[in-house]
Every structure is written in C-alpha cells, then in structure tokens.
Amino acid sequence: MPFDERNFDATGPEGPAGLTRNRRLVAGWLFVMCFMILVMVVLGGVTRLSGSGLSIMEWAPVSGIIPPLSHADWEKLFALYRQIPQYKLVNDGFGLAGFKHIFWLEWTHRLWGRLMGVAFLLPLLWFWATGRIERSLRPRLLLLFALGGLQGAVGWFMVASGFLPDSVAVAPSRLVVHLGLALVLYGAILWTGLGVLRPRIVTSGRAVGLRRLARLSAVLVGLTILAGGFVAGTRAGFDYNTFPLMAGRWVPANYAALHPFLRNLIANIPAVQFDHRLLATLTVLSVAMTLFAGLRQNLPRLPRFALYALALAAAMQYALGVATLLMVVPEGLAAAHQANAVLLLTAALVLVYGLGRARPAGA
Image 1 (cartoon, one colour):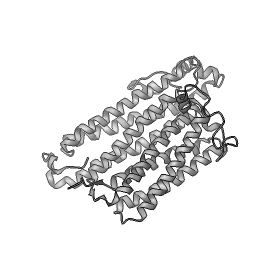
Image 2 (cartoon, one colour):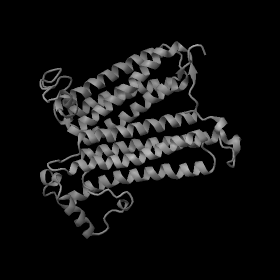
Image 3 (cartoon, one colour):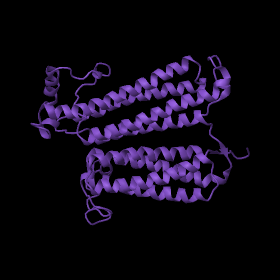
Image 4 (cartoon, rainbow, N blue to C red):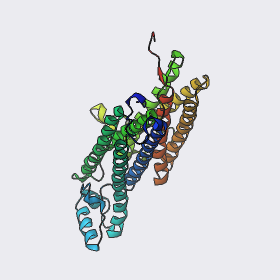
C-alpha cells in the first residue's frame, strides 16, 4: 500500500511538510520489526534443534516474563518437566543444570516475542497519536498487530502437541503452521514498509516475463522454506546425509511408504527430505532464469539491487543446505541456513515489489 498524501492526517505537529520524514520514520520502524522477526525465526530454530521448546509447560503471556528467582522455583518447574514424555524418553537423568540450559533458550525465545509486541504497539500508538500514519494504513497495522498476537497463540498450540503421550517433540504440521504464519507476518510487514517508503510504480508490459519469473521465484522460496519446516519437524536432516543421491538413488526407494499417499509429504522422512531438495533445486533454477532475464533489461536501482541479492542469497542458501546435510545438522550451520532463508525471501519480495505492476490494458 503506497503512502497516499491525500489520506495524510495533517493535524500532527509538522503537518504536510513532514510527509517525507514521517514516511521514513514509519518505514524504518516496520523494517526494524522485520529484523526482529528474522531474529525470532533463528531463535526458534535454535530452540527446536536443542530440544528446548518443551521446557516451559505453561503459557503465561504476562507473568511468564519473570524467570525462576529461587531454587524452589527451579525445582518446581523441573518437577513439571520430569512429568512429560520428552524427559522420560530423551533427557532422563540430565539433572537441574541441563534443565536450566534448555529453559533459558525457550525463555529467551518467548521473551523476544513479548518484546516484539511492545516494539510494535508502542510506536504504533505514538505514530497514530501524532498523526504520522495515513488513515488508510491504520487498519492494516492493527491487523498486523492482531496477527502477531495470533502467532503467540499458535506457538503455544504447537508446543502443547509435545506434551501428548509418547511425544518427545512438537508436531511437524503445527511447527509448519507456526513457521508459515511467521513468514506471512514478515512478508506483510516488509511489503507495507516498502509501500510507505516508496509507492509502487506502474510499468509497461515489457517486463511482464521478468515479473512472472520473480513471482515464481518468490513462491518457490516460500514453499521451500515450508518444506524445510517439515524437514526440521521430522528431523529428516539427520538421515540420508549424502548429496545429490539419497542412499545411492535420485529418488529414495521408500518415498511412498505411507498411506494415504499425502501423508508421505509431511511425515515420511525420505519423502520430506527429497521434496525439500527438489523444491530447493527448482528455486535455484527459477532464480537463475530470473537473473538472466533481469540482466537483459535496464532496471531501476531497487529491483536491480534486489535481483543481485536474490541470486547471491539463493546460491548461499543452496550451499548452506548441502553443507548442513553433509555435516549432519550442526546447530550453527543450521541456524545460518534458516537465517539466510529469510534473507532470500526478503530479496524475492523486494524484487517483486521493485518491478512494479503492469499498466492495465488500454490505460
């Protein structure tokens, strides 16, 4: 949504003369929120890799900000944790010190989510009260804040699946829903920030092929990230640690082992990992085609920069994915792979935005 000067509330202290400055302030705030979401995604990945996500057995959005303050508090929480299957089946006997380690990771993850809520709400109220946000933008910002709150509830819905009998981790499908909503929120805030900073241009039909390729790349990036969520949820990255073949085959022998067939896409480790590999390869090919198409055109600065960033991020992401697989998912490398995935999505969305939209026929 572009920043429409006609909808600007000129009752603020600077009036219409402060439009450009206010646009930059609001856009900068939204881009900071994007960075916070990126950090949140990485924290979530580290939390999952370390098995820390089930260490806090209560959803207390307000009181949960205070960590245990005494030995008795720690013992109480540890006693609760010892009742869930993860402790009995995975971490039996690792002691209070081990519990503290996983607790602090999950607590930091949740604290960052709360800080994000504050970092969104307080500036929103200030910008609103001082007339620095256009009227037509306000409903969208309220919706984004509501989606952020929903993400917290979805996060608990995901965590609760790990407390079920014989469960030692969260359900992969719920993990992907949580990740997917984070990507939607990230993309919506990024797109809104770009719209506030610079209205989207209307271009001729000459770039229609490039726009289609850019959109295809963005869709494939999103699908690949979601497929990576199933890889993470099923811990599929700890199997078939060779590349490009899987157990000596291009397509694993037991790809369709589960019935009905669709279950293989979300629960069968060979199929889940193969699908992620396939989507990643298709993404790189799409990005390469987009790059070649873009190099043939005289692009403005923003889409040209986004095009180069997209190509670089795609190459890095593919290399990080292969290295993470071959090295059997070391936490640092896996976290870098997850962080770069968000940067890749960013480049794809900025490119789509920067290329503008086609002028309607007859206009």
